[in-house]
Length: 112
Image (cartoon, rainbow, N blue to C red; front, top):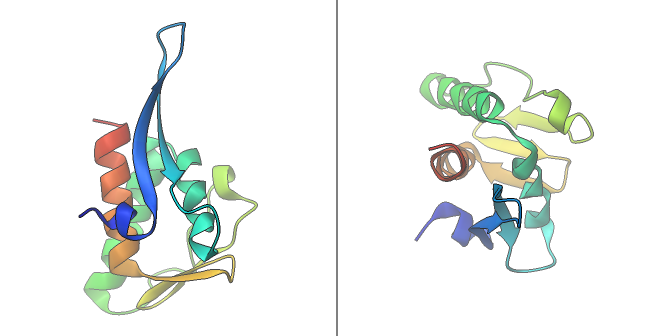
């Protein structure tokens, strides 16, 4: 089972009449703290790779290597590293290893 599914999300590709295809994560369970993970839809390839890189550094050093993840596309969301977790908007505390797996799934689905 995918880590995104564990958190109540599905990966979908939506095709528009102009032929454009858009990758998205869609929440299967409409309520709950996991809904803050919807911010992943706003991450471009570089941001996703940077977030994964940060998490790998934290996991490899068993500590926070930075305060958190900051990007223009998620400037309205607070994403702080609190080893061994990521705190998203003080709503969801998710293990760094789970967050990394989710981001890798998103990267492979949306950008490959």
